[in-house]
Amino acid sequence: MGRAKKVVLAYSGGVDTSVCIPYLQHEWGVEEVITLAADLGQGDELAPIKEKALNSGASISLVVDGIETFVTDYAFPAIQANALYENQYPLSTALARPLIAKMLVEAAEEYGADAVAHGCTGKGNDQVRFDVSIAALNPNLKVLTPAREWGMSREETIAYGEKYGIPAPVKKSSPYSIDKNLLGRAIEAGVLEDPWAEPPEEVYEMTTAIADTPDEPAYVEISFEKGIPVALNGTAYDPVALITEMNQLAGQHGVGRIDMIENRLVGIKSREIYETPALSVLIQAHRDLESLVLTPDLSQYKRTLEETYAKLVYNGQWYSPLKEALDAFIQKTQERVSGTVRVKLFKGLSSAVGRKSANSIYSPDLATYGAEDKFDHKAAEGFVYVWGLPTRVWAEVGRQ
Image: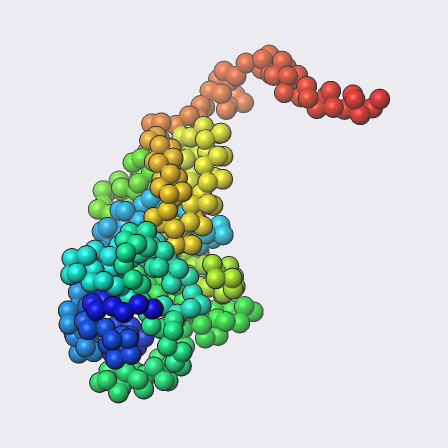
């Protein structure tokens, strides 16, 4: 680890990132620590967090509002890509990391820092996401990772902080590790580490227990323009308000809970619980609209790239050349993805039950079996003969 004089530290207000401040100064000789707390809609009151950073020894404490950028530049492209890691997780936490990395790099450049720092441990995915994103945005910046290297237990970390005037947590800490932003919550640790144990209801916050959800379904019409959700039930919403409203609508019907065994980038499996009401429903509706307006070959080929896209985001490669190239492809596919999908929300399930678009390539006259049928049935005989010819020849040779 090379020496750094001025460092911008990603700051959450928790024990680890608070202890990073005196640790960087007293153990690694950093002269000045600037903290940066990103407001991504997590709902925390950030004024006390700002004050805590200053009390912990930071020279400057920044709070950056990134909520709208988070939705428009990170969540919406992921919806256009139908990005689901391992076909389940809509990347609510992973999408936040490249934005925070960008904020760190911009602050370092603005304040003349020669390094940035974060409080990630060596077991998680976030360390990779931060380190790789920072390197992509400014390869000349050092990346300091004190929590990955100090080797202190939780109790030792708290004691170290107390030595430098950082108060210990006043309430008994939750047994769960929780990451939250506007797009959702990620919950792990505690009893959840047993993959056989059902998650207790207390871990959930954004979604209602199925037993307590309404006994009547709710219907929501989601309108898209070029793959971007713009309206709910005919009412236009700005990006942040749309996600907020969709979280509430889906969450009250228990929609958006995910319980999965996840393959982390660092080679271990982890049991993860997610709540992503809006993101889950919007991806489902978007995918359904694509089925109405895209040609079969384009739709099917895009599906093969969506998994790659999700892996790139999960693995911290948001700013990679491959991700940039996929973005260009996906944007081209979205030119006709405009229309409305009607979704039914009921007892933890969301179902697309209607869809319409001015760009629909569904033809009732061709699909019907009624008198209005315009399909040329006589043309089918020649098509079937040509289509099946390789199989027919193969079979004939095999009989010889």
